[in-house]
Each structure stands twice: as structure tokens, then as C-alpha cells.
Image (cartoon, rainbow, N blue to C red; front, side, top):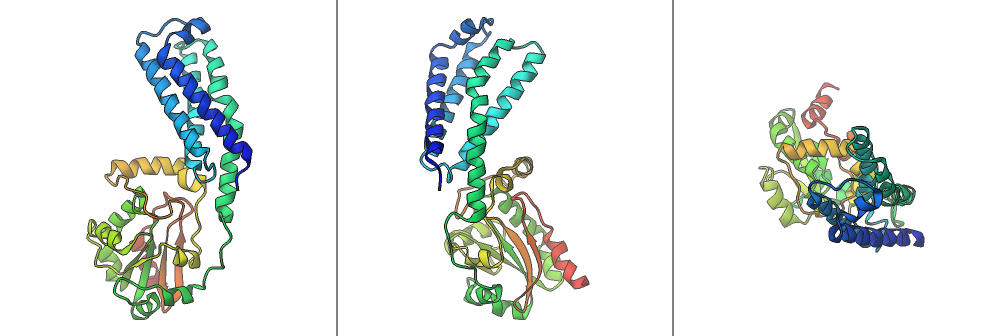
Length: 310
């Protein structure tokens, strides 16, 4: 799955960061003397930088065990290696740092750009293709006939009674899934007013899902546990790549969602699974919203109302 060079690169990055960070902590003024720069007023801040760099080294050592699986660590490292030089350019233009500090950027940041980007590119391809061959997904009608709610009713049977709004979540710790549940709580009366039943599809086991949904007052809604992702596959919901899960839009929206009080929780399920929302009646998909980014935020009430106007 991954090439041997990926592990070697990450192990080299781990060793470099641990050594460099350790030297900065032990000898905080040595770099300034070597570069001919004035000593900082508060060397303790520079030592903190050394500790942060060392912690990155531990992360790279963990990622080296399975670079494809641990691509988020590589992504965070690459972001740091991009933002660091940008911060230096800003400080250099303001005359706050001497140009000689660019030598540190060369070994700390710039030389790692190409291999880290290559690792992330490979991870994106693997996750787009699927990390292992799997059987073809069941047709949606057949999958709905197999999927059962907590009350034992199949999804297909439920769809014969009323229109269903299937809300596929990612995992219990996802900020955006917590936001989605809050949206459902707020929009539930509007959704049900047009004759639609919200149904939640999740990756957790039944007990954890019930406790989680109870926090939002949604535990009484029909729900389906699908930890094997069979229903997700039948509805053509894929696993996300780096951009879909950690792109700029995700960071910005994630910050807004966190400030709004949705927070984070434990990873419970497949952290790469993408969510979606579907309107289903009599076993037929009448409308589909497949997230292209984990940060997409569908308006569930508007989706439900759209079919009443069609």
C-alpha cells in the first residue's frame, strides 16, 4: 500500500525534529550565535518552539508505522512547514527577524514539502480507490430491505408508510455531525409538518447511539446502526480524501462550529466516511445530498419541503 521510502522519510523527519527540538531546549541561544542574530529577550519562548518541534517528531514516528493510515499527522506537519516560512517572511519584512534565519527554514521546512505532498497524494488515491477490494454494494432497495431500525422495522417497510429523510452521519466525535443533530432538533417540527420522518443512520453500536442522540432529544427517532457501512455503500457514500476532510473549508467551518458549542468527541466508527442526506419513499431515492466536503451543511427542512412542491 505504501512505498518503503515513505516510512524512511517519516522516520528521518522524526529523528530530525527530536534532535533539533532537544538542542533548542538545551541550548536556546546557540542558533542565534551561529546565525549572527541578536539574542531574544525571552529565550524561554524559543525553548517552547523547540518542545513543539520535538512533539511533531513523536507524531512522525507514529505516522511512520503506517503512513497511509496516519495521513492526518502528515497533513498537520505539512501545514506547519508551510505556515512557518510564511510567518518568517512576514517577520522578515517587518525587520523582526534577520534573513539568516532562512537557513533554519531550509532544513526544518522546505526540504520536506515534496515528500510530504507525495505521501498525502498517495493517501488520497488509496482512499479514493478503497484501501482494499470489497464486494459490490447492494442495490439500495435490497439494502433497505435488510437494514432494520432499533424497533426491528426494515427501512423498506418504513418507507411505505411515509416519506423518509435519511441522515447519514460520520462518527460520534465529528463536530459537523454534532452540528447536524442540532440542526435536526431545530428543524424537526418543520420536517415532520410536511409528512416526512427523519431517520438517522450511524456507525456506532446501539447503546452508544441512543445515549448520544438522547443528548439532542432525538432518541425517539428511527435509527439504523451500520458499522459495516453496507447501507452507506448502497447509497454511494464514499470515504473522504484529505481535501474533503481537512481542506481549508473544513478548518474554517470547523472553527465556527466549535465556537458555536458543538465541540469534538471520541472517534467512534470510520473517521474517513463521508455523510449524506436522502429523501426516500416506497424504496426509491427521490432526492440525494452527498457531501463533497465534511463541512457541507444541508438544510434538512428545505430538502423535505422541496418534494412537496415537486
